[in-house]
Image (cartoon, rainbow, N blue to C red; front, side, top):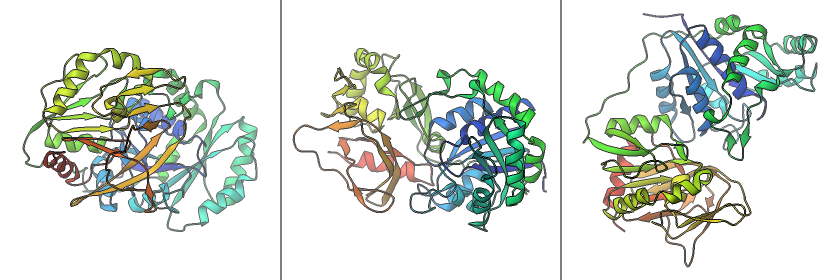
Length: 442
């Protein structure tokens, strides 16, 4: 049985800050308002864009990353979640061909892996017919890619768009419309990216949808990005494993979790969300997970909740497994130091401090090898560690090019903490990692 009621495309751009996120959100909102099922995806290791995707679509957004996971896994995540009748929208990362090494892990590689069309998003501000050679280059650089069309962003009006439309046609790429400059489409951002969805006025999505319906050829876009699906999406396999209870921190301070990781945790047992900000006790659990987020913005509230800190310390002392990623790691340290040098006490399981003085960007893919297990993930933060005395022994960590980088991994009993956001959505990696933790007693 086949269906022609399904579309899929990847929104990519020549460079970052071209408007991929806004065009993605505008199209999602427009399609949802039409009553169409929209399944969002995000290329690369981003957390915040998928939060916006999910807020609009009502469905969890999945990361597709061909460096952190195998090609087979990327295809499986897409196939298992693509709606039988609906639209899959994949928001690209950086420029179309920008990857960890050349185009490895890039949006282009994802489009090739999935064999789906690419729709370019081009910042049309301060540009007219010069868009033609730009588009021609992107269309012809890699003949394996199917460039279906182009949407222009930040266009000053219809007369400006006519120049851009002619440029696209002469470059051999179908023009699909534009989003105009509009003051209500400005999404605030901070040092790690966009503000969280709840912090921005959601009315902008309605404005974006209205502008999309007016200026973008949505029906034509869906027509030229049809894909054929032979069967409905395959459900996630249910594996027989020992059931466990996972206490997962989720609140204003901790909320960066890969959807595929959550799927794996659900296969292992029951996830019980809790808040280090608002709860006084941990829920009864076998595993404690503290994901990344913005603990620095909630430092005072976190510090004052000494009851939950005591409960977390007791959990770790019992030898139960604890995973703390980036913001979670910062929370388990001795203290947080803000830009002005103000010191706020934290849990104190580890004797390091995290400082935002003299901020410096630490960014990139990370890999470390454990016995019978290779862990891959991503590091992205501006804070620095202050580790008194001799730093503890740490597994070697390398970047995407195989070069050793300084990113300590802290272990205490069965507690694991580091700046790395782990990707454990593939096969049995989550189970293997938790098994590794419970076998180590240091």
